[in-house]
Image 1 (spheres, rainbow, N blue to C red):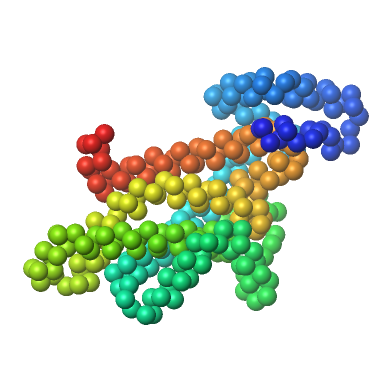
Image 2 (cartoon, rainbow, N blue to C red):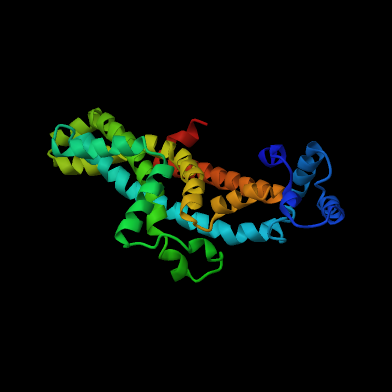
Length: 290
């Protein structure tokens, strides 16, 4: 709300309406009041899940959020699954076999991707799709949140990969460090002394020990997925909350922008709580110490 309020003009500055009609609409929506009064009034209504009306779409903000939130969850879930599915096994390999030369390329690629924000990977994948024609490069923004699943899913691979690869690289770095530390634990040496194979010691015993630091940052990873998805959605025209937020900011739609920000905060809070639950399952000692 602060950014929209600080921008010159308001939502009705871009409308071709008479000044009297614009003034009446501002009064109806409460946009003629001071920012402080608008903000606290919005908070009071938001506590009752009343998020106001979008000036751009002329619809309740809550209905727009319901339409788009599912697409953001779909993109974020796919990206998170790809990131974990690629990053964790790669980290176990590079951490437990760090002297093998063929893994140097994997570590180098991970370092390169860690330094690449989702904006860069999204642009690279768009260029790749445009040059090869293997993937659709546009048009998904015209689909509504209630479009058939097939219409949405065919556009999913590129934005999901663009969002997932930098996160997968970060997970690889963390997992690699965690598995190296786990392999130095006395229990692993004792397991090897009992005749357990190297692969079982790594993938079963050491990997379980290395899960705690990984799960500990899972909530931050979920937040990274959600914040990064806003950029990817805008670049790749994915019809989620990020693209909706962009439309709200361009149109100076105060209540819609505030609703999108609130939805993002809810997703982040859910990710942090889910990470704490998984951490308690992996290591029950964390619950006993609190």
